[in-house]
Image 1 (cartoon, rainbow, N blue to C red):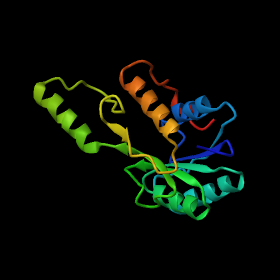
Image 2 (image 1 turned 120 degrees about the vertical axis):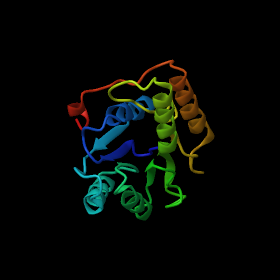
Image 3 (image 1 turned 180 degrees about the horizontal axis):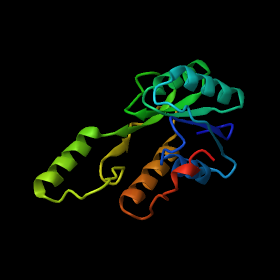
Image 4 (image 1 turned 180 degrees about the vertical axis):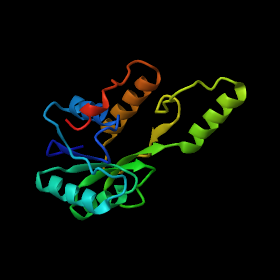
Length: 180
C-alpha cells in the first residue's frame, strides 16, 4: 500500500513484541520498503505521538501505524489531515476516518477471557504466560478499507490463513531489539 516505500511505526514502547514481525512483513512485500520506528515511551501521550507522526510525514512516510491504545486515534487523525493512510490498533477504527484506515488489528479480549475461563474450569490452564494471537482467536484483522486493492486483500488473507494453519511461525525477538 505504501507508494513512498516508507511506513511509520509508532509503538508505545520498543519492547513490544509485534514490532520486529511487522517490519519483516512490510519488507517481505517489497524489499525497497523502509519502516521508520520511533517509540512514544507512553501508552497515552497523544501529543508526543502526533509530534512523531508529523515528523514521519515530513520524512515521506505515507502509512502510519500507531501501537498504543491511548494515542492511536490521535495518530489516525494526523494521518487523515496529512492525507496519509493508517492502520488502526486494538479495535476496528475505520469509524475515525474511512478514507484513512487500511485495516485495524483487533484484539478479541472477550474471546481471550472465555478461553482462559474454560481452561480454568477444565483444569487445563497452564502456569505462566499465555499467548493469544491470530491462531487462537486473540487477534484478528478488521475489514479492509475501500482503498485496498483486491489482490492485496487476497495476499494478506492467504498469508494469515497460512499462519493460522501453522505453515510458518513468527520469529520471537528479544525485547531489546524492537526499535532498532
